Length: 408
Image (cartoon, rainbow, N blue to C red; front, side, top):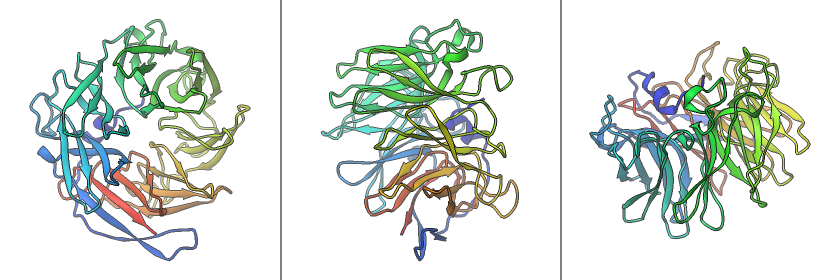
């Protein structure tokens, strides 16, 4: 079962001390440092940061799953989540704190920024109870573009949001849509949606369960022809105890869905969760669970549907359980994170940042040890000089997560 980063974060409880440590990059570079950019304190500051984007002004922008000080969420994180900005000098500013009412609660997607500096994202709850897509103006005014209504509309939007050149937003909901699939029950099997620039919503595809797939978790990416690509965490066949092991799918502009690959639950992996990445030749890259060691894989899917496992994690110092998306540099090296592993022994460590060369050689760029960060659940952001930026959902002085830079 795939759980949200918010719920996963709540299960992590440890007391940590933040420090700056030295990491070694594996591409022939000298020793490089992990730089701590911000430690979250919980409360009004936010807690449990997710994926980062680079803004038009060069600052980093992101969301925290909880915190912010709002009183409309009944949990122990003292708030319903935030949108934050982190300047180049490391100063954090909370741009918006969700109240848990009609404005939304628990942001779980990445952010998208337009040319005017407006930010767009999604919350897993709030609105009418099952999530929203929102716009945040540069001066801090939040507008709910769409409040999901459950089936036959979507519910619980989570994963990668993407925008086209006309200002339309695309994403997935984890549930809602079709309620006929036996795997999904009354909650629905999930959807692919479009939010137009005027706020109107269209369901482009409602997953049916079974061979079609169900419960998309990683959102979508967009190609130059307007086709959307994503993954479902279940469906695609009868493997994985009869529920299917997940799929890679394409949705055309007219809403036609094609299953490009159905995972078998063997060495090829299962239950993909993070967002996909596409190269210039149309190959798709992503991360999944399963594999030969049952601790996760990085895979490549060619345009003809041939899947290649580029790397299988081993439940050791190389990391395991990759959850976030991947990024690539101009040489074809892939970069990502695992939420666990990286310690000296089997099952040790609290996650890694890794590099995967085109020949499949994996290098651990940084191993999180708990006292300086834990559970890097989101992917990495690649800077123009090859520096990598990311977050850990937990760790730090108050166990509320941090923003870090891995600098060459």
